[in-house]
Image (tube, helix red, strand yellow):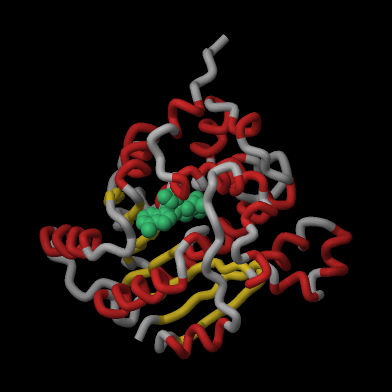
Length: 275
Ligand SMILES: C[S@@+](CC[C@H](N)C(=O)[O-])C[C@H]1O[C@@H](n2cnc3c(N)ncnc32)[C@H](O)[C@@H]1O
């Protein structure tokens, strides 16, 4: 029998918010179990090796939300990137979008930014594939932008098109940090596409409602009260605003009956173009 790996040891050095990365990872690993057409083989392997289901209390509903969210970001990213776009994943965790979108085979570039401890873990577990660059930095810090610029310069890439994702991260930042990030992105990535998922204001300061998040001692801080107003405040063009709950409810017959109700506003994702 293969000895199970030690999850506590694996996560010991991560900052609290870094520990939240195992929540969407475990969700994605369960796609087959729920018969949802989505595959993350690396997540499946890690979930098995570290017995994640034993350490993380993740409901079926929350697991499915993580899967349909990842799938919807995959769709937006592949549509937005086109043939030679550059993907930037902010707060990437153990995301495998680079592999899922077959970007290795296309010789496409992906930058994945996260805290140094998370990037250290990612290097240990996954390693960088062709075209993939892991950047160890706080996403609010200009350091990662300078690194991206340096790499693009070395490769002679001029005026590239960027698609930036902030998946499962915005809610952990404070409104002030979101403003700092938007300033950084607008300054360095004009006309780029930018996407994030966002919770309803009801969940601000209520991470305790989700045991898997509560266990990491992380808290929800940011929720825009109106996505149109958020876009206006940051001079963004809102290209799409869709409910993750609606996609989620589509997974069950009963859910289809409720898909248009008030629940649809509880958890959403938005796509913007930066000025
Ligand atoms: C819930 S996980 C999401 C991971 C990944 N995007 C996914 O969907 O699988 C949140 C991630 O955001 C990262 N994060 C949060 N705040 C950050 C910051 N200020 N700078 C860098 N990474 C950050 C955490 O370390 C963690 O990996």
